[in-house]
Image (cartoon, rainbow, N blue to C red):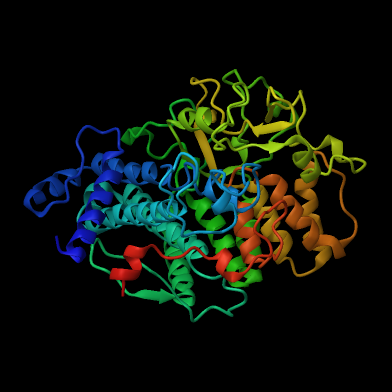
Length: 497
């Protein structure tokens, strides 16, 4: 088979896989010989909603925010877990050896396949967004103003969101424009399997900014946010404008813009958008009382859903939890479990510092956010351990939470004292004493990113953006640009432009 055709075929299959994830019985067939199916799919508002829901389901897959970009690959790279001995399952990956191809994947992570899976699944999801956008203008009058604006806004926002994360992984960090001219990744804006030219880091950032701003305007027709509820997974047209935390909603787009502007070094704009989310009144900090609820009940909320600005719904999260977070079985014989040690977790939360023992995130019997291993000394996060299948809050995975907006505002504030005030808002909410020395802001921010986003992937992005040379508890230090930059998949190097 012609290799270039083979690559196109694989991309079509990837898109087909993304589409087939939907719970709908009738789905898309993108083959030219069945073009009428496309017309049928987008002949109703429900068809557009189904297609958009399919894109979100793909974003929640294991290769993206359902594992690798939250508690999986990114947190392994950020030094979160103990199973990093040389030759262990994550050993090579934790040392930033991205090109190993193991013939015995049960004993070692196939880093190359993992990174190619992130790349291909992200672009398949982008293709799904492009498929929606390809058809949406023809359905504008049928959809009506609100549905048209929300569906188009979310599709554009998700496309930009994914491109931005791909850039943050597969290109060198922007570093105040030092790498602006580096050719990075393709920006796919059309529904096509043809290779596209790579754009520079600066060009990708500019396009992400333009699309997020466009999405912000489109989504301004519906700015309500309601809390996570029991029928979260529904895709009924009657419920489409509900459960907005599981969509790239109006406020999530503002949060994404805050992230992007901070990445670009545009601190005034980063501060502006972070403050808009903070001051919206749509999100609030979790309380100690709420966290203390038995995780086996439907009222437990270990992922802090009132703080979710954007999260994904992972219907099969228990499958991963039982595979990777298994304290009751103490099953570490294959070095796949994602565990740390009690000592390291306590050191991370600085529990020996006076006043820090009241942090609501630390291991404690009254705050069931951690589970200790039966062997003693090992510890697992319970954040994703779905004990109660009737509790939908145990199947939503945070991609963006309220504390990040405070951290962005703290870093972007014009005066260090103002920045410290934003940081202290989170510290107070977590039960920590306030800081009084503005000179320590950068040091304390890094500590807070590390404490707050365990199992969420964001600490890795922070380390790379700040070009931190030493990853705490890392085994691959010192860090370099090459270690912070994922290699492009071989198929992209061979057939890309």
